[in-house]
Image (cartoon, rainbow, N blue to C red; front, side):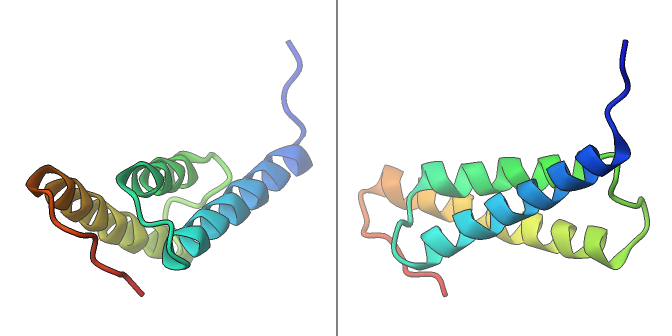
Length: 91
């Protein structure tokens, strides 16, 4: 079986990072729904699990902080939806 080329994995990491940033931008620009917030959490988990990400790095710490933040946002949005309240704007 062929091993993935290291440059391809780095490209994959960069694409996943870019997709996560785009999703966060869409959320901030008004598409504030639980589904998008859950997708951001899933993307951050993929980034943290990526083999090219160093186990100890500033980037990893940043992704961990972002993951915690987006998990809280997701929980709040789900609570609001279940309570029938209007969405809070996050910036």
